[in-house]
Image 1: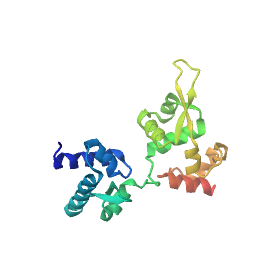
Image 2: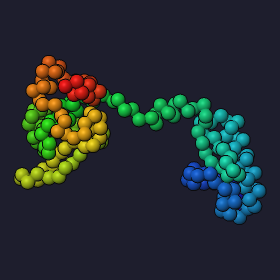
Image 3: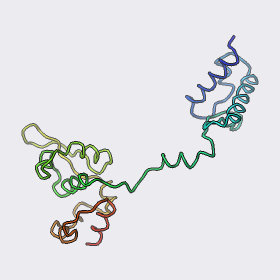
Image 4: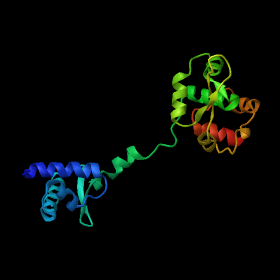
Length: 193
């Protein structure tokens, strides 16, 4: 027969893996013990976690048990889980994004030639942010990947279609040789035209 320590340890693991509130009856079956005995172990664990003031607690929900985060940690959890929508793009990212937007579909080699520097990492970052995507392959030698903008790009810049991008001549006048420093700044400039 399993010890109390073993049973409690297993119940912790079960709650962690189960995800939803765990019925003591299901946990009891794993050890061949009575549901009421299992419920007592869960109650003991609930009390131990509360007394230890850990960041993870156990909560009873309709006679079932589940791991939850400590209520007092809500602000800290929200700080890391809330997506940051206004992340600034680097100068390199803005350059590559502009090239892709205006020349799409465009290959990495074409982007590199326009910028005069390799753009591998910048392209990876823009792909991860879902501002650009792979549109296919070129018919050129080696069949390089073609990149284009996404619906996320259009949404960020309040555009319905890529045809609504301002003309390059208009942008040059608007920026006065000072490029935007963030997506929001680029959006404001674009909307002002």
